[in-house]
Amino acid sequence: MYIKIYFNDKPLFLCDEVDKTIEPYIHHDDAIFIDEFSIHSIKSMIHEMQLQKIHAGVYLYTSLDELKKAFFKKFIIVKAAGGLVLNKNKEMLMIFRRGKWDLPKGKLDKGETLEQCALREVEEETGLKNISLHNHLLTTYHTYLESGKFILKESHWYNMTIQDEQQLVPQAEEQIAEARWVDKTRMEELLKNTFPSVKDVLEKAASHVL
Image (cartoon, rainbow, N blue to C red):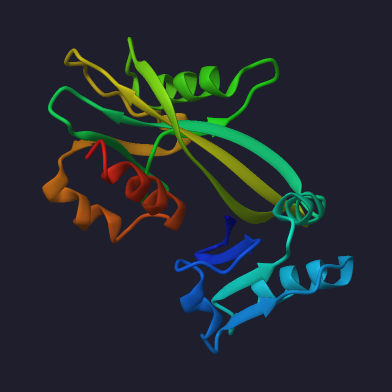
């Protein structure tokens, strides 16, 4: 098993074994591999992932739970939730925010469940109502610096559907310039300008909803 964390567009795999997904990264000259579990090695991995010459990382340890706990302690964890929304024509809802195509999501408010947060954020960012939330699809992780502090955003994604036709109203205060229903034939074009974590969500969904 593994957890994938993005440092910008660079993946870091925390894992308890090297499977077929991770194996190709082990042999890259621009990847860092660590299999020693210590606070020093965790700090070293975080440092290495910020270097321009490094494009991927693999951190191997027998207990993924222990590794995750120790690694996550180095960050401020911010939880968020969002949705992959399909309409009755099997078109998917995407938003254009700050120059990138994205999926609607946002930070968890105090007292909310992740499911409540996901529905609220989709409604606020797109103007949709009467959304049906189905199963949990995927959890993605990415890091960023904010006021000199390392943030790890943990985003929970859910499959959602709507049945009736509704007008899309992009949330301007969240810098969303456009909300659009996209069919499968247009997806490849939009994926050229999106985030790697969004690509992971779409890839996870593709086999059974797209």
